[in-house]
Length: 252
Image 1: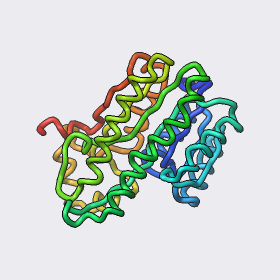
Image 2: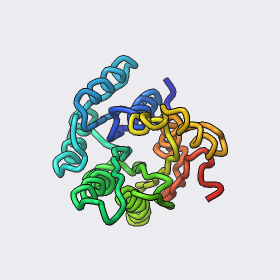
Image 3: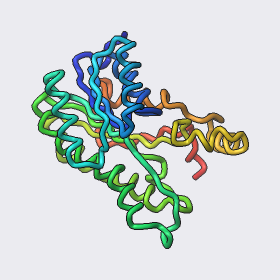
């Protein structure tokens, strides 16, 4: 085990698969204590088994981040098990695909409730504990779609742009307490949410060709960026959005 996160206590949401699971495992491998959650109880249990198998200090909660009681439960679990909270990784996310005129209000609300409201509620509840701990790091997951758009992505793109605005404001308001807040913008990443499309060779090849690195990103690629932002190595980085897209957006 390395020790870039030694003494840190991290909450990771959406840790039942993909980027969230890879992040929970990497932070633990770097000596963090990890509290993780996912909407799926089965996926949460599997992540916990993986963490326990790696000898990590961890605790699990199957929960919906869009519910008002989830953020308090996660923070209280961190305090009860590990006595403090230093790190928050807001990874849980969802999407919808419908053009504006056909997008149901319920779908708009569902996407924004998970992608923005969920992040806001956890940040708000965590801030007093981060301050009490002498400062800490918040890493929010957005998307390259925070800066661009495509057909059918009104709810998704607007929610991810909202993540950027929320992140910058938290960074500005709480930097004086030693709290850093940053976000990352993944590009085409091979995860549980995207696997169905990327397992189709004709689709995968198109997206690989679009990136400068000529490959899809893997959850571990994103976890390494999150680790940097969560660790003291990024001690002078706040309010930043890091595009981690393999060069997808270099040509606009």
